[in-house]
Image (cartoon, rainbow, N blue to C red; front, side):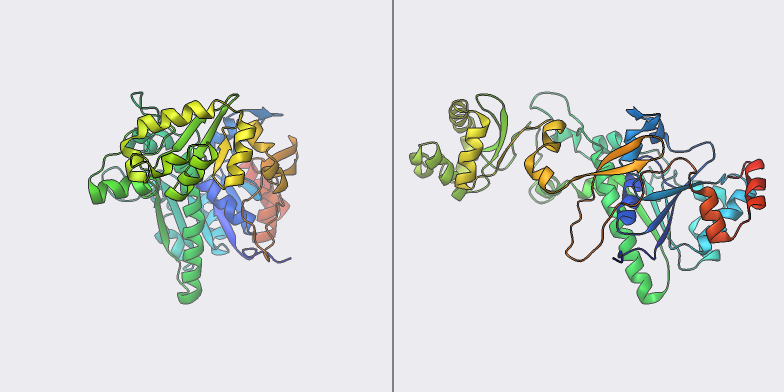
Length: 395
């Protein structure tokens, strides 16, 4: 079955997570994503464990369905070779520090000279403009600067980063969205463009109700741990055996909860009848619910909450999450064959369409695994030419 992006060629110069995970979305949709790395290796994520036969499981998480070539972009021959590939490409993705591509002679203007339809997506910590534009931006720093850490953690404790690289992950989605939007525009006007994506911009825009509450009402949100700033009860409760997240998001659900726990009078009590009144009397209400929650184990509570339509779920480890029957039923884990690591397990693309073929063709590539194959196929290079480039340290 035809894939939606199978006619798209992407040259991916990026490293670590945000941009590579974005290009992986394009690859899952059928694009030919070619990782372009230095012969000496440029992606530090290849060096982050745990390892399977010397190959990084961390690297696996962002590089499915891609091919890999090596080119020394610091050499004249390497830059010339890369520009020959740009002539035939649709998209270039990079996440060097601002200004690096220009120093290499590979800026957007340079790329347009060989391909006016090229789309360049640049991903940096702070963007191409502004006083911080040349500063390195790593996910935890962005979490700190954006205000995310300030609202994450337990009340009275230190600000806490999210347990995954959330700024990188969110930015990866915008990599794919922005490129597909640019392609759609190019379909209309035939012209490429430069996309300027900033981790800080993405994380600030993702502060959602926190930023809106401050901008419009001057509200400074506080660290609430597993509770919610604006809704009660909406937090983790300890059951007889383990913790459980309970989300009673409106007055109707609260009435259901009251009936479930045999406290129907709470629903008519002026202290608890509306969410606003529950917020004002949060401590006493939460304490009452907490006492009741400890009387049953989590599975029993989940059965009851399901019966009453109240959202709830166990606080799982990653092992428990992967083994959850819903995760299993959705075939979330796939298996790919890797030349060194053997069978590699990965979480599948979450995209599910009735009529699109979203499949995994390749395991994450070895460094330079497809160099000769791609240069021979796309540029018609002979084995003699390839050997000379190897000897010169170009590939």
